[in-house]
Length: 104
Image 1 (cartoon, rainbow, N blue to C red):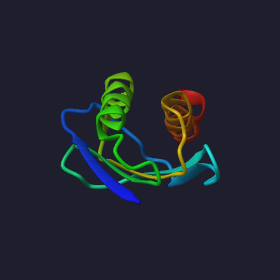
Image 2: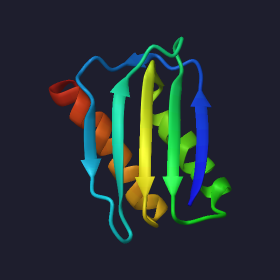
Image 3: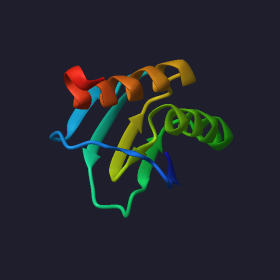
Image 4: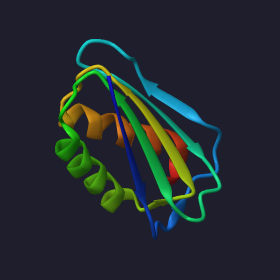
């Protein structure tokens, strides 16, 4: 297992809904926990993954996600079992959209 941590500053969108979990930890999939948190305007992402050595790919996917949503005061925890970048992006977008409800 490998743990990766990312922190993005200068987000503008704050989520206020209750924490949400999307996805299922399983072969080729992942679960995402997203929750509001007092992080001085930052978005914090922690990834626990079974696919060791893919840090640069994770960083690219997380950077793209942050550019899309510009989240602030948000904590995201990911448990990964080898999901592809496309599945990661899909689950993360699903997590945000679930929290935003009709506002998405």
